[in-house]
Length: 393
Image 1 (cartoon, helix red, strand yellow):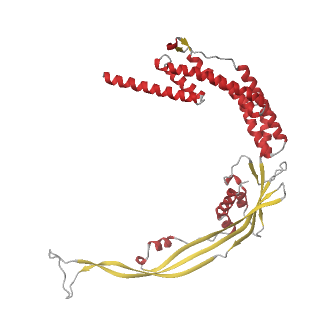
Image 2: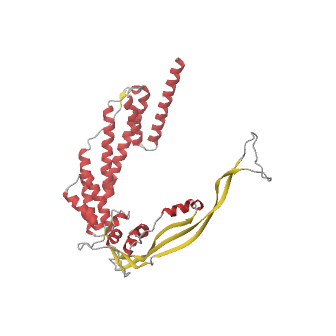
Image 3: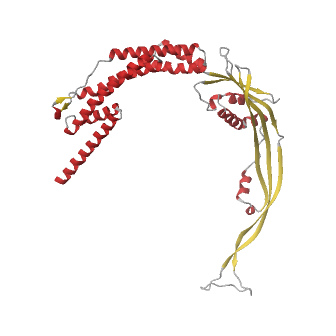
């Protein structure tokens, strides 16, 4: 029992030594916040444990060095006077406050071997933090205004990010919300989509609506908006034209062909005889039975119905601001209506499983041209989706 306790104590001591070494490494590498965090976690468990005295000393040193480094950094950043430096100053003040909040609940922390209390020079940073927050907020606002005044899309998108940061910083108000809406409007690429049927054939209205419903193409993008109906208030950036130049239908065609089926099938049984016509007996003296086979046949009349729709055209991308075409892609597909059924004459046993399936089929009225086009809509949309996905604006 005593040996077990000794091993446990030795293990705990080793773990404690390892954590101290790791903390010393953090400190020597300048990773002060990691050193502080590790020490605080150890001390939160038992700050009076003798094994944690080294963590108290390390926490004292790490805190002192972290504060000094942040204050030097703040002094330098205030001289730089740009948006990034103002952002960094604010978050450095938050870091200074955060460290004090970590340590304050642990106080007092005693160092028995030196007969003293650990010293932490705390400071009130509230006013400095609020001042830095205001400076950062004003800078975010000013920079956003400059970006939006440029009326440039990419600058507007940068303004959007800054305004959202400002909203997180100050909370929502009508001024910021209105600016964010302006940034979204200026930064959005508006795309006007048209469908042009130049085939000479009538395209079902439902098919046009499905092709122009860009919500179904999976092109979700925050900064791109597709319209199939023109909004007179919007100066569109790009156009996508779906041009259908060919819509052709083959004649309704019925073809018939006959095919013979033959198969050797079992057709009862008989007693087995030898070459002399005598019955063959088994070991028990009983007559042996054997299967009788015969060849049967049937004549299949196979009927095929066929009608096809061929759709051809292209998709044209156009820069409406510059008045020029950017690219074009072929848009073509074929959809086939096909139905096969059969009847037979003769012995059904000659038919295969596939033949029996055809026997269950029946004549189907041919689809109208409009219905055939609607049936082809998935093919057309699939090709269009492929083009749009591979060529996002």
